[in-house]
Image: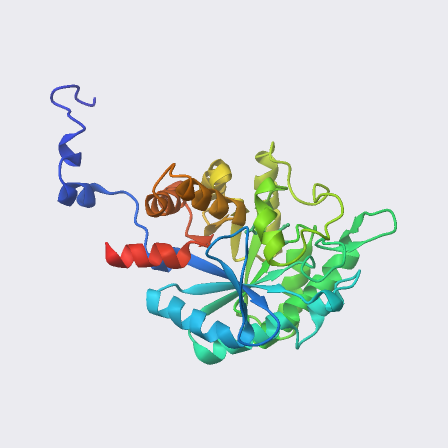
Length: 331
Ligand code: PBG
């Protein structure tokens, strides 16, 4: 039996900072963070993303300084996303499989500057298509599953050949993890990891990201025929089971805060590293709350990231990664 008041006073162990530190159940360190960076063509460019205040797109030659910042802050991994020039986008997103595309050049630039930082790359066609969908679309507007996965495997191979360490399929096509895993094995990339966006929901939180990669204005319709319905949780467990069976090393839940129940259920059921993506709309909400004077930004950043760890995440993809890492170093 637990003792009751006054034998039990819950406030005793909260009464001093040293004691709170001693009993803390959750630890957040910079090594829990993956920092997403947007890449743009051209040279010596920093293009601020209006809907993501504080986040910019960087030209390839300016990525090295970002990578060094990440290394100095103890952030172990970067996630790279391209803003493909409009003239290189087509219906099938063919630029995704060009071994000299923006993302491949970005991977090489980062690896050159900081060889021991991890690089995660997104596999999906949306930054490369004229319609903004993650796959190939037929004349009726349906996203074609099996034709798309073939292209995704090719995309994964060019990224791996350029030096990507973690392939992260975010497209939600069925069977793509297996197709990508087989392709990687066949080409000798047996140590390239796959972090599957296993439970990725059709979400209103992705708006600023679509601005950043230039797909928002292009997107026809929505992504509900492939991304998950926010009403479903059991289905997320099935998605995770399939991606693990097909060869994923880690799984991701996305968006983050609104889906912590999914993180917890996945962690408890599968006992594999689970990551969450605190997505662009979540970043924008925190920044807007701070600007409105509704809350302290730094406190919101740390509290939300700790919530992911408490829910069971091994790590978090967050645009606040460098802000958080600095706060953690200063504290
Ligand atoms: C592309 C992709 C998206 C995000 C990551 N990869 C957008 C989408 O699915 O429409 C969103 C990330 C964010 O909002 O920060 N498939």
